[in-house]
Image (cartoon, rainbow, N blue to C red; front, top):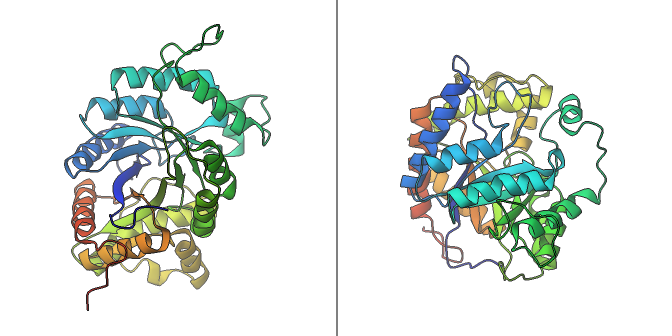
Amino acid sequence: MTDSTRRPTLSMLDLVAVREGGTVADALQIALRTAQHAEKLGFARYWLAEHHNMAGIASSATAVLVGHIAGGTSRIRVGSGGVMLPNHAPLVVAEAFGTLAELYPGRIDLGLGRAPGTDPTTMRALRRNRVETEEDFPRDVAELQRLLAPAEPGQRLIAMPGAGTNVPIWLLGSSLFSAQLAAQQGLPYAFASHFAPRLLHQAIELYRNLYRPSAAWPKPYVVIGVPLIAAPTDEEADYLASSTYQRVLGILTGDRRRLLPPIANYAANLQPQERAAIGDFLAAAVIGGPDTVRTGLERLADATGADEFMLVCDVYDPALRLRSLDIAAQAHSAMRTAGQPTPA
């Protein structure tokens, strides 16, 4: 179990949203400024997610972006959240992240997922004629571990750069498959509750119950994705969150667009089934003013015992996004630790 006497660490996952009226270049610069701000706030890591063929997301070349963010910061860990391993040969991933580890020693994470991160047409373009089986992902993870470890005598395939860098590997998932594999391999586990929270508690319980200690990770380590929109008041936060509501509804209906400006009373004008679907998607979200954010983070910490919160903050106005992170960091500092009584 996690140490119940401390607060979860704060980190951030960035999908590098392209905003309506903005450009890809704008999105990349906003990501860098956000990472620099997160570093000043003391966040532990800044991850970027691989997606393809999506008009509103500019994080397809994930390793390139990791290098861009790491080069513009000095202390925060930077990594993939994640690289969709079925889209790539393990050797290519090992060489890319091995190179990053040599450029930015002790600061690179390699989070791995087994979903395509795209639509079927693009998946075929990425993988050509390859047909994935259930055995492929565990085998590819094991190959990556070997390629990033020190080369053994007589080893014929060596990642150069990569061998001996021991880039930390994290398994990501929204189902029970990766939870079980992470437990068996003694690896840290990040659950994608920022978009698929339904199996969150079941996956965490399975991971912890089955965990086999490893040299690098003697104890299980759980990260959970948390959609986060903070503002001075609950009302303003809900208004800013309407950009996220629009994005989620677009995902659910197959109408993906760039990140749209907020709309007043957006949720109130939706059909009940649309509000319910958005609510299910964002069940782990924390949206509100400072007190609401603090109690929301405390509730998640109590319910999951997570070691780390990976915040996902899609606010249309970049300056208000940074303000949202400020409020979240302040609320995090004010959190009671698990086991402490709630103030009257």
